[in-house]
Amino acid sequence: MEDRRSFIRKSAAAALAFSAPILPGYGCSTKIYSKHPLKTTALKKALVAWYSQTGNTERHGRLIAKTLEVHGIEVTAAELKHVDIESVNDHQLIIIGSPVFYYDTPDYVKRWTAALPSINGMPVASYVTFGGPEGNQYNAACAIIEGLVEKGGVPLALDAFMNMGTFPPVWSGDEVKAHTWATRHLPDASTYRRVREYTKEIIRRVARGQRAKFIKTMNAREFSTLFNPVWWTKKFVDQHHIIRDKCTECGNCVDKCPVDAIDLTNHTIDRGACELCFGCINNCPAQAIFIKYNGQRLVGYLDFMKEHHLKITLPEELNG
Ligand SMILES: Cc1cc2nc3c(=O)[nH]c(=O)nc-3n(C[C@H](O)[C@H](O)[C@H](O)COP(=O)(O)O)c2cc1C
Image 1 (tube, protein in one colour):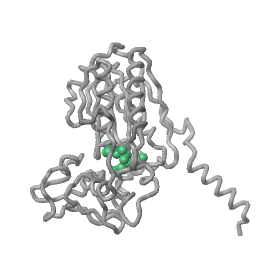
Image 2 (cartoon, rainbow, N blue to C red):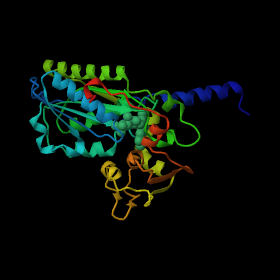
Image 3 (tube, rainbow, N blue to C red):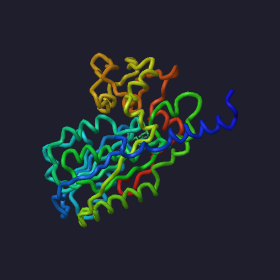
Image 4 (cartoon, rainbow, N blue to C red):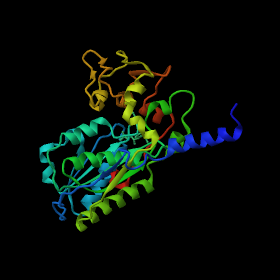
């Protein structure tokens, strides 16, 4: 039988292996940089665009846009799906925001950047909002930059802003997960200060022509992104449908679904196409989306916020 000392030694080795970054040179560490010269250091017009399911990433995007405007920069601010991608080169800076989903940038955002025309020499920056404690947010922000660099963008900066997680299993059921509850006051004034500072730093970097190099290094936990975590998570979903009698046909779920999986003419959800972003249940004001996950009915974001009297603090620029 294994003695106590050797057991402890083996456990420590396993823990180290689990948490350590995968060593550079083994194909899991990626350098992200551009060889293109910056197309300009004169910033007149910026594009700030985001993907956002429950408003956090959008709020930061709008604050970034306001901060740029205060500095005399004209801004196109929009959801990714409303951006005319043929006009991206009319700008001298592109900033893209996204939530972290499943330890990564959502596929929707990756598809969007992949569809861009060439943006050779364009200064680019990214930001993510996230709700988990795992520390994977940096890689997700890197993944956005990676997509923009593939199109010729020149990376300047990235940042990540924490708030309450919006993955319904973290609050549905008997108790709210401790981390979710502990972060329910975010974003707050200090988050917004950081967003403004981040924006000013980007402006400075454009003016100085200060490019950046990022290194995306996967740790063992993030290896799950290579094994289709959406597919695995779907295995826990027993039911996912629309309760026809409750549906008010407001269209929120259709609007938020990134893969057009919802058809309100016959109240169906294409579960094969669904990417399990929970945008439908999180934005339904009528409790008409029924999802049973791991044996329990999920509660959507709007209902969770209402039930716990939670309100998001807005930055003064977005008040009124
Ligand atoms: C489907 C789903 C998966 C998520 N996965 C992660 C994750 O892997 N890591 C993390 O830190 N937060 C995760 N979150 C939390 C969101 O990243 C976070 O709450 C984000 O701010 C939501 O942005 P939005 O309000 O703009 O949609 C997840 C949320 C959802 C809905």
